[in-house]
Structure formats: structure tokens, C-alpha cells
Amino acid sequence: MQQYILRRILLAIPTLIGVSILIFLVMRVLPGDPLQAMVDEESGPTSYTEEQKEVILTSLGLNRPLYQQYFSWMLDIARGDLGFSFWRDTPIRETIQRRGPITAEIGIFAVIISWVVGLPVGMIGAIWRNSFTDYVSRFTVTFFLAAPSFWLGLGFIVITVMFFTWRPPINLVQIWEDPWRNLQMTLPPAFAVGLGMAAIIARMSRATLLEVFREDYVRTALAKGLGQQMVVWRHVMRNAMLPVITVSGLQLANLLGGSVAVERAFSVPGLGAALAQAMNDRDWMVMQNLVLLFAVIFVVINLIVDLAYALIDPRIRFQ
Image 1 (cartoon, one colour):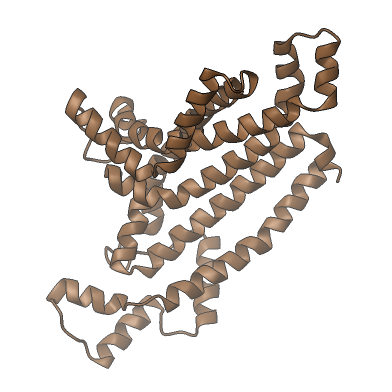
Image 2 (tube, rainbow, N blue to C red):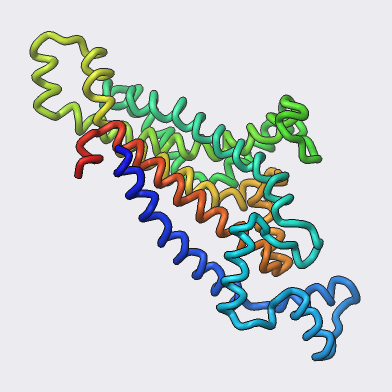
């Protein structure tokens, strides 16, 4: 098992290096001039001399060759220095420390909601397939699969505001500061995202459970007189969980990209909102560090999924 974990970690290293190079190059070819945008913000549409531009580029380290800028960026990251925002001159590390927990909470709550809702719905549809309950659950699952997360979020906001006079907190509140106000901020977007993820898990779990139910060893266990509940929990669920875990990992990773739209819809000051603001400002340093952070989280999630595979199915770790 230790060799399997080490091998997966070593395979993740070149992936992250390649992703970091791609992110760095993409940031440099994006349209728009962040220096001109900063000048326009401070003094209105105007131009600056080449000498002024050279001074700014030198202070930001952007006049060096690209390979030097890349290696300097990597060395700074290795030292824990993520640099400063072009616009606000604030450390990017502080931005991540302040906003990151909010995005993490939304992701964790969304995964919990997706499993608590999606897995039972999928099991009910598989065990009592082609029943009235199965048809209702399949219709509901199809609806939430088709509905975008931000649309669900807006609908959730309208319903809670109109019928329950609910208002989300305006200021950023961490969970250790005021748990109730923090949950008021994070649970609505978590429900909006989690219900969409639950629909995917419900459909996948139903399909995999039906497939496993057709296996010979399941029919043999039922023929020997074992109860359906024992067969489901002891034999069927273990083999049906592998595709569900894969889908859950991919959905959690995709949540990082969807956090931009969801956090903007709910006015949540998380990392997705910070990335959207950096894109509007053409703030290279913030964008490339946040995108790299999302890529690292994506790789880590896939690594955890691989390890979960090995724990559930011992055959995988020996292949």
C-alpha cells in the first residue's frame, strides 16, 4: 500500500509542473494590459511614457525573460511567498487564508448533501425499480441534472427571501467567529451545488447498483436465503461504490470552477469571487496563483479518489 501511495504521489509531480507552465503561459497571452488598467482606474483613460512603464515592469519583475519569471515564481511558492496583488498591494497568501475556508466549507457541505440525498435516492430507485417511487425519483433527478447551479441558487435566494424573509450576511464571517452567521452564508450555495451533485450521484448509484444486482454472486447469495438487506450492504454496496466515488471526486473538482458563478450569485466572498475579481482587474499574480491552487486541489482530490479505490478494492493496489 505504501508503494502504491508513493507511486501515485510521484505521478502527480510532473502533472503539477506541466499545469504550472501552462497556467503561466496562458496568463501572459491573455488580452488586456494590467498596467494600463491600473492607470485608467487611478487617473482615468490616459497613457504613460515608456520610462514610466519600464519602472513599473521592473518593480513587478515583468521585464525579465519568461523563463526567469517562471522560475522566480516557483521559488517564491516553494518559500511560501505568493506575491502581492497588482491592484491592492495585499499579500495573495492573506487573501487565500481569509477566503479559502469559505470556499472549502461550501465544497464540504455540498459533498455531504450530495451523498446524504443522492445515495438513498439511487438505492431506492435500484431496489424498487420501475415502481412509482422510482419514476418520481428519476423525474426529480433529471430536473436537477438539467438545472444549472447558479439558477438553483437564484431560485433558492428568491424563495428564502420572499417566504422566510432571510437575508445572507454581507460581511465575511468565519465559522470560528460566529458559526450561525457563517452557516447562513455557506449553506445556501452548498445546497444549490449539492443538489445538482446529488442528482448525478443518484443516477450513477442507481445504474451501478442495478448492474451489480445482475451479477451471479448476488443471485447466488439471494438463492441461498440471505436477506436482501444483508446482500445489499455486505456485497452489493462495496462493489457499486467505485463508480460513485469517481463521480463524487470529479464533481468536487468541478466545483472549484463552478465556485466562481455560485459565489457571485450568492455574493459569497470566497476564492471563486476573488478569481472573478482578479479576471476583471487583469491581475496576473492573483489569477495564476489561484488557478494553480485550484489545479493542486484537483490533483489532490484525484489522488484521494485513487487511494479510496485501493482501500475498497484490494485488486487495484496490486495491479
